[in-house]
Image (cartoon, rainbow, N blue to C red; front, side, top):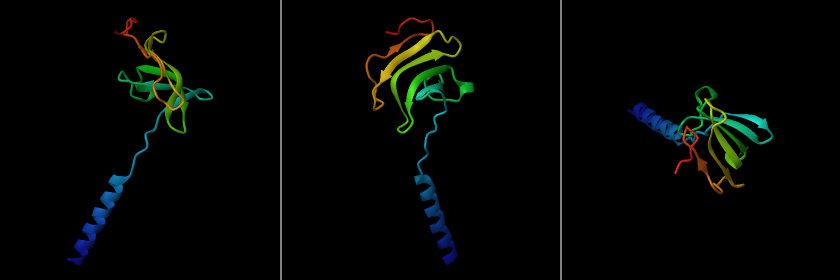
Amino acid sequence: MKTLATLLITGLFYCTTVSAQVKKHHIDYQVIEDDSVRISMNEEFHVTGAACGQVIRYTHLDTQRNVFIGRFKDVSTSNPQLVITEGGYDALGRKNGDFITRYSNGEFMA
């Protein structure tokens, strides 16, 4: 009985410890120059691997805080001349100014 109680307490402690660990999010990107990067994203603008990307974001990345800074441009992987979204972030990674979004035919979204 004492062994069973010890096993249960140990198992409970282990499960609590494992579930309390925080996973760090890894951003896969290619450095173009200095803090300029190229990041692959899916159609919902979630970061993804290059092979799965439908959108490429050209931006600046603060790697200490994992935030975008400065101007950015999102282009279609199937038509790199098509700018889907463009805008900017301030030095703290907050949206700053106008964000322009276009449909896949290049027309502005309302």
